[in-house]
Amino acid sequence: MPRSPPTPSFALRGALLTSIGDPFRDGLEGTRRYEGDGLLVVAGGVIVDAGPYVAVRRRLPPGTPVERLPRSTLLVPGFVDCHVHYAQLPVVASHGTQLLDWLDRYTFPAERAAAEPRHARRLASAFFDATLAAGTTTVASFCTVHPGSVDAFFGEARRRDVRAIGGKVLMDRHAPRGLADTAQRGYDESKALIARWHGRGRLGYAITPRFAPTSSPAQLAAAGALWREHPDCWVQSHLSESRQEVDRVRKLFPRARDYVDVYARAGLLGRRAIYGHGLHLSEREFAVLHASGTALAHCPTSNLFLGSGLFAWPRAKMPARPVRVGLGTDVGGGTSLSLLATLGEAYKVAQLGGTSLAPAQLFHLATRGGAQALDLDAHVGSLLPGMEADFVELDCEATPLLAQRVRHAEGIDDVLFALAVLGDERAVAATWVAGRCVHRRAAARQA
Ligand code: GUN
Ligand code: ZN
Image (cartoon, rainbow, N blue to C red; front, side, top):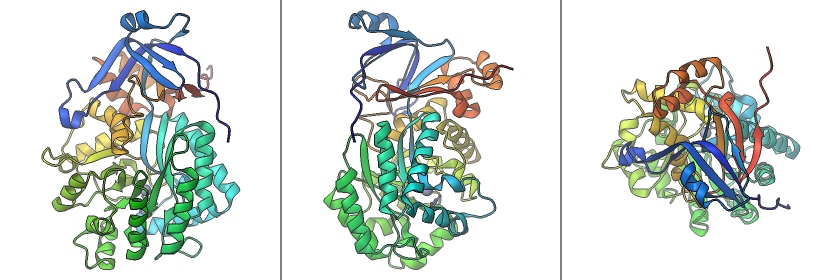
């Protein structure tokens, strides 16, 4: 598929904010950079300069057009959604069940519909429209068991030049008819999809066993073997989301020490492996995740909606063995594709566990922290020279309530916190991908 030519040089002048370190590991001071009057310079789809306007202006190549952003705008890196299911869009907000029943009653029927390629393409298109409108520029999404659902996902991502990780779901047992593969077929189809999509432009393949209850030990071992053959691919799955699920795993894998050990035995832990949830983990399991560099995707709206449990921040980030954590919307178990809305729920979940996440930590989770969890922080997640030019114009006065709150804000952290608690898609004025504006909010209707 032809790709558009590189974007020309241009610069945006306005307030810039970026995370530059890890506020969980290194403390809050010095891990983010804020410029009230900043200049961001883009050329060929990449950030080539960024910093205070007065300094960067002097280095600006003559003739570079400079656009001045509105006073209420804050320019931030594009958001990173580390865990989502694009084909579950039609079942978001489905009433009355918890995880295992929710899968049977709503999710599997919705995923079965993605066998039809035209339906899968429509879903992928609607998904990227919605994620970009929410300011999300990097996604790691599950597809369905059908290889065509992966083609639909990557085809749509490629058309928009979005950074996207995705993969065919592997399920060879306890799956309804029409959604099951076999260990061999799952391996073969995944391998063919890796050859077709992995490393093409901004796309990356994730080997995707759904979760331990729907894969035999043979299928998990085949997934591990495939990862060893393609170590620069990702692995994504679910881990310890509901107590019922954990009990089921204990019965299905009696020889494993615990849930994490099921994946460890299959060779499915390590950098570039990211697991959704991790709510009911033991100390041993956290230690193994830390030692192996495996990441968790915290999905607060999903955990609350499905009644799965509360993510234990102090345990996940214990200084002696911190685990890498990104944020996931987990739609359709999650209830919003907005990372801003997800931040608000992450804050509340942490509060219920006695932790008050700092604004800088929240902002980090939605941007650079997510990129770190996906091992993509050399490419996206911050507004620094050399990074791909994925960024968002946030409107800090998007709604009357937000405007009112921000008017009384005391500094940038206070503004950030208001955005996290009160913000959602409405606060995204524009989204830029690889130096191109791919979404601009419609003008507000006059009263
Ligand atoms: N565990 C296994 N599959 C799923 C899924 O599709 N969504 C969520 N939230 N948990 C899962
Ligand atoms: Zn999920």
